[in-house]
Length: 164
Image 1 (tube, helix red, strand yellow):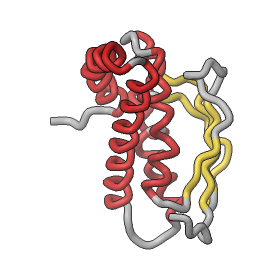
Image 2 (tube, helix red, strand yellow):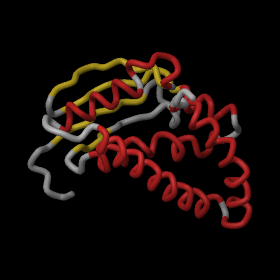
Image 3 (cartoon, helix red, strand yellow):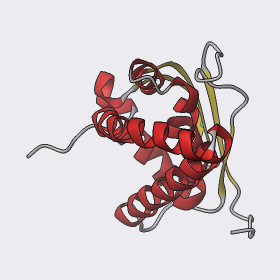
């Protein structure tokens, strides 16, 4: 059986999350429900990152391995990847790209989950990088989910970062 694409996996998750989200909001209120959901999504992103790091472990620069994961998951998969992105620059200490269209946000909006699209999608990115390698950080000034025309991804690798 072929592996599900990220966008298909997230669509299925969104369909399951929608009634859970409505129930949580009704019982806990939107702020507490959002915080609870954000913690669960963070744990999921960390688990995915640790699995990706284990699959790609070995010699070489962690930022370049991270970039290879990005390429294999998004850049090389075309429309099924869920993102339309323009890579601006990549090197041993950085990966800079802009997402010009996010099919994830569009899908969450279609599922009636606009108010938590950022939690379900955007919040994964920095957490994923940190869990993949604690020396990789994401700096993002804007997202499509927040209404910006593009998402700005600026990943930085600092080999001397010991905060991990």
